[in-house]
Image (cartoon, rainbow, N blue to C red; front, side):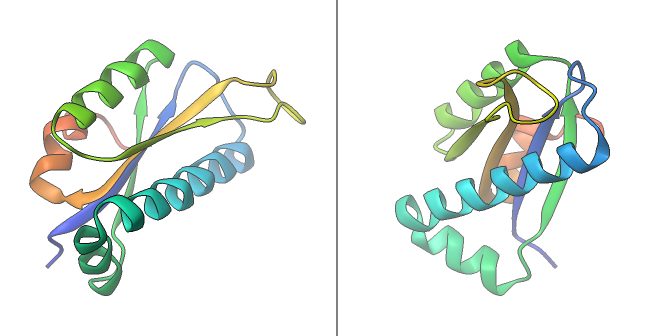
Length: 118
């Protein structure tokens, strides 16, 4: 049974290739996990030791990512926005992904529970 999870929210409107999407999600997972390790070490330890549950969902666009980010931060959940370097498929600085948590599952679900899986 998982009590903590991390959710990566990827933008649908960018129509990223599967490989590009995987890399952006990986950037988000690592960046947010390190942030949580520093800011909420008890959350990080619990999440890490119970198996590091991760879920990937989709948002419509950049605006929705910012709305989700604000909601998460209002609840005290660390987040990470990922901006692409622009070396392959999309322009430099494009925001591709929002990572939420790892954090207690019931908090994360208040932010991302309504989103569909990728």
